[in-house]
Image 1: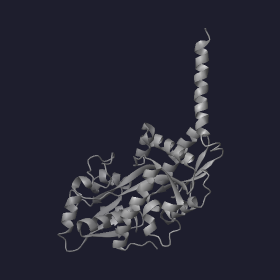
Image 2 (image 1 turned 135 degrees about the horizontal axis):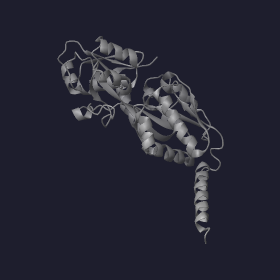
Image 3 (image 1 turned 135 degrees about the vertical axis):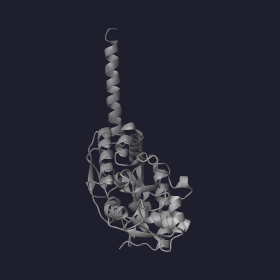
Image 4 (image 1 turned 90 degrees about the vertical axis):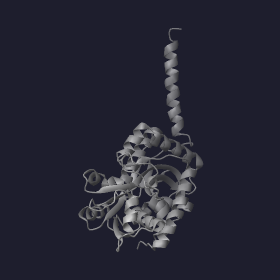
Length: 326
């Protein structure tokens, strides 16, 4: 009887070990070798860093290495195209953004793949909202003010963005279409030059992912008018959403895990469970927040619906504004 507590301790320890072993082998012997996560953008950017966070978490949970491989280019299309052509065995996955998963299909001709047909949705991870900010000399303190002010101008107000066909570009065109605002979108090659010309007054405003503008907003070199997510951005809680101002504008850069078409359901469900656990955890939320990302979670079906609905939404904008990416 004196050994009973020890026996219980051993049994509990073995149970925990077998539970972990069972997770790693829930799909037979998957994964029994290194899993590659293809990040569709260059090293060092937010998409790459998110991929590395997820890879580290999955490596710990499955007891097998998940490594990140960067395949950048064509707005994320090159990396995702590589995933679509991989064997659906769970050893090549993709960390992709809303561009190649939804928007790019209307911008790139020819498009090398159909995201809705050639990929298996696994899990949403997080999103980075846009922010509309103006040069401090612009007499507008809200996005609603800016729309009204633009209609009084003889010439359209100029709004810079990080590039032709980027979500910053699409968001301005969406706002123009739905409000009648007199806005002219001015594409740049990246966040930095778009922001610099807004600070310098060469353009009236800038629309870009919030993370790139925060330091200059906090330093009062730019005046934030609205964020374009459903909820306020935790890093700038005093900046209202467009929806709070009565404007129907939601535009974010969202990230998700996908695999090749035909990926076995058991693997998809297992990965979805683990990724959701991470994005819902205190650790996951904190690490994603450090990159300016609001965590997301959901089922593979919900990711599939997001891909479809976002593609339909931006199709109208791209066709109306006649936007192309050569």
